[in-house]
Length: 315
Image (cartoon, rainbow, N blue to C red; front, top):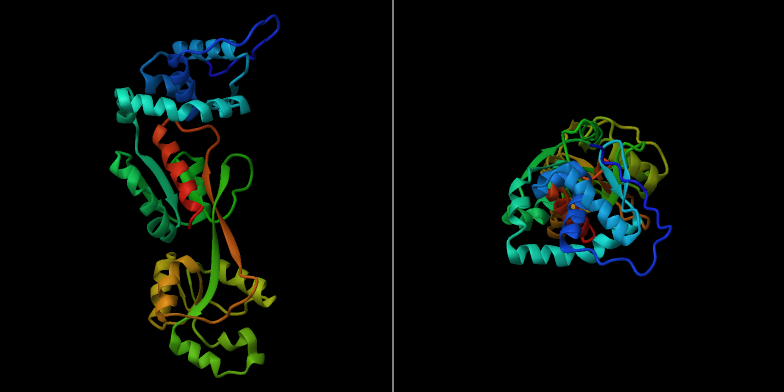
């Protein structure tokens, strides 16, 4: 049975649209959240033909097409987005009050979330703690953006926090948060740099060890182009794929680095780290929350996605 929904033909329809019953709306919401008639049928304990029939009945009653066919599953139309916005909260509240939501919740699989280790540990996972206490299970994989996006395309993850927007149309990306980058070192190095001529500019850093999270120095190279308007001409003394480790080394006096401000805000406030530069136009990078087109059949993926997007506005 296909997930295809046939267009609605309003010709001949008269009078106001019929009011759909709660069962049709529950089925609609399950399809909307899961992105598939098959997944919705499994969540609701119904057959796929029953789900298909109910959605077509709802479309006849509303005289609007609610879903478009995709290679895998279905995608909601603008009409469906509006309907979901109106009915989701009341139906969820009713399900919680009557206990009808327990079956769907008990069938949910763990949500596979991936992203940069430091952003996961300091921002994303603390924000998701309330969902964990409510029964949402998480399987978390730290890593670099490009390999994680390849794994997302292969189906190994449900959601990936990416440091760049993915290319092409195989993945759907939504802006999550902006990172502000700062040039920092321990006070011992900051004092040494302060004694050098101002005219030296960034060359005053060339004999100081550079600590970075990747051998190709993407963050530092971008900072140099944005702030100094020139190419970076030094290599890394230490490369470690975890910005928390970079932070620890720089704080211990190993050298200098460029870090997200959120990650080193405490050290800057305490004086353990010092800003080496305070440009008016601070380099900023946008992080994205990425998933495959067509919603997952797991309702908890939607819960995790929505809470991350809400939390990301405050990071």
